[in-house]
Every structure is written in structure tokens, then in C-alpha cells.
Image (cartoon, rainbow, N blue to C red; front, side):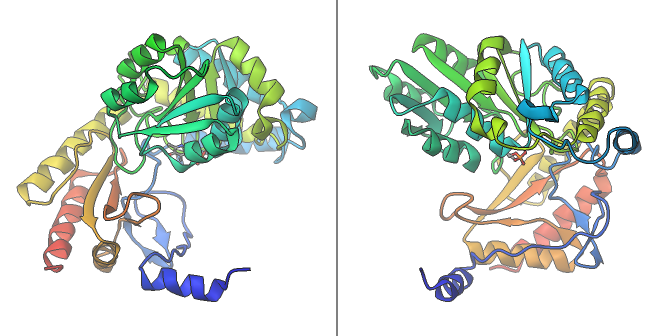
Amino acid sequence: MKDLATELDKLNEKNLFRSRRVISSAQQIEPVIDGQKVLSFCSNDYLGLANDPRVVESLIQATSNYGTGAGASHLITGHHACHAKLEEELAEFLGCEKVLLFSTGYMANLGVVSALGSHNSIIFADRLNHASLNDAAIQSRAKLSRYKHIKMNHLEELIVGKDENNKLILTDGVFSMDGTIAPVSKLQSMAKKYHATLIIDDAHGIGVLGKLGKGCTEDILVSETILVGTLGKAFGTFGAFVAAKQEIIEWLIQRAHSYIYTTALPPAIAEATRTSLQLIKTESWRRENLQELIEYFRESCKRKNITFSDSFTPIQPIIIGNSEDTLKVSEELLKSGILVPAIRPPTIPQNTARLRVSLCTLHTKEHINQLTHALERAISKLS
Ligand SMILES: *Cc1c(COP(=O)(O)O)cnc(C)c1O
């Protein structure tokens, strides 16, 4: 075995050692973390639903009715009426034929990519895709060809003339560390032109983007793609789903190992998620407010000469470059009671270490003023 102590020391020297913070309050704008109340800009709970009293109440009610655990996998006896209803409601909301629930987004990606790809397939993947899509591609044993981030001409160069008859294109909908949005309509045309199957993982877009909250695919014909969404982010609960044509969903039920060989989500989680879905549909103010905050943050950065990124989503990275400086800024912010995580390689490419600011609809403009003020000070201390 490797000498782990030495390996761990090396990570520490390179400022790449990771450790966990302990949260002791509910998920909220000002959680208690490591015993300190902080102003947080690092959750994926974009719509503030993770601690919404109505969602919480659904979970409590369903837990008293159905207990805590599903008890088995979906194909044995774990598939509950609560799951079936949530699947139907999600399909209707998104305008897809069928939806299949998975226990996590990571598992949904592993399941769908390895059930549809094989050693004689080829996968075209955006270079900045989420790790779970990359792992899924490797697990499928398909050939893997990665195109430059959202560069459609590069994708076309790679795909043209490839004779594998099973081609898959994999992309994040909203890129998790950059906040950029995939050009879904162009990707769809490309898939059509080259007879490829397009899989979009919209973990960060579902609930947030689009007037109705359907995500980055709201304005395209979603029935022609395979859409993956997660429930642990804007939905504020837990789990994930794949939305696709009936035939594809039936195939996943037969072949996706990460669906078949695992315990179903607790039914109460499905019930809580049904309530979240209702709130996503009816409380559009959550999205509108969030968009306003995103613009306000960008304007504040501009006024204060903080270099911000080309993102119009709640993910607003401030790229610092090296890991050491990024950690310094993050630590400096924490001294002022503000939590913004430092994201370092290998999560993102070398020399693009960054502070990943994520905004929530429950933030106020005053919170954003505090953040940009502290950022300005912390960055100026670097030089
Ligand atoms: C968070 C995330 C996932 C994983 O979802 P989980 O439900 O947390 O496992 C998958 N893809 C992307 C793009 C993500 O950001």
C-alpha cells in the first residue's frame, strides 16, 4: 500500500488537504458552523426550501404514516406510492414521458450512462463536466472524447466522421463550479445531426432557471433528450431523477445497476419533495428574487473592481488562481463571519482555484453588501 501518511502530508503542503466543517443548526442563510454563527454563501439550497416549514411538515407527516426507511430496493418491495406519485408529477412538470427516481445524482449519472453506453460506444463530454459524469463515462467502458468547455465547433470536429453507431453527448446544464449554462439548443441540433443521444445533467438548473423553473431545458423540446436532475439542491430535499422517453426509462429499470442494487429513497423524502415541487411551481417570486440578487452581486463586484465571472446563475465564482491565496481569502472572510468555500484542484483545473459564491433567494442586498465589502478587503491584502 502507498505510504498514506506521506501522501497526506504532501496534500497539506500543496494546500490541497480537505477537511470538514460541522454544522449544528438547520440549513439556512446564517447556519452555526464549527460553533460559530456565520453568513453563508455556499449552499446549493438556492430557493431556500431545505428548511421551509411546509416541506418539513410533509416529511414529518409522511414519516408518521410510512416510517423512516423504504426497507428494500425499488424492484423488491421498496417502490412506494409516494415515489410513484412524485415520478408522475415530475414528468408532468417537465413535459417528459417518464421519470425515474434515483437515490442520488451521482448514482443517476452512473446508472444512465452505463446502461446506455458500452465498450463499442463513444462519449463526447464537456471538459468541465461534473465528476459524476466523468466517473460514469469511465464506468461505461465507452471511448471518451472531451471537448473544450461549451465550444460547439470543437465538439463537431471530434464527432464528425466517427463511425461508432452509439454516440452519447454528456453535459452539465449549469456547470457546477463556473455557473455557465450549456448551449442546450445547439447541443440538441448537434445530437440530431450526428445521430447522438444527448444527456443533460441539470443538477443546478432545475427549479432555478426558466420562468417556470424547469431548468436550462425549459425552452427546448425536452422529449428529445435525457435529463438528469437532483433533488438535494433547489428542491431542498434529497435524491435525483432521470426524465426520458418511456422506452429509455424501462431500459434503466432493467439495466441501471445504481438503480437496481440499492435501497429506495425513504417514502417521506418523496412526499417532502412533492411539496417542494408545488412550491417551485407556485412561488415564482423565489426565482425572480434570486435573479435580482445575482444582478446586484455582479454590479457590486464591478463597482468594487472585484473580478467576477461570466455567470448569470446563482453560482458566482471569483477566480483567484493559486490554492494558497484562495485559502487565504476564504480564511479572511471567515474572520469577518462570512463563509465562502475555497474550491481547489482536482475539483477544478490547475491554477483556477476560486471562491465559489452561491446565492440563495433568502439572502438580502445587505448580506451581499457585507460579502463584497469583505471580499474587497481580503483580496487587497493578498498583494
Ligand atoms: C451535485 C451534482 C451531482 C450529484 O448530485 P447528488 O444528488 O448530490 O449526488 C451531479 N451532477 C452535478 C452537475 C452536480 O452538481
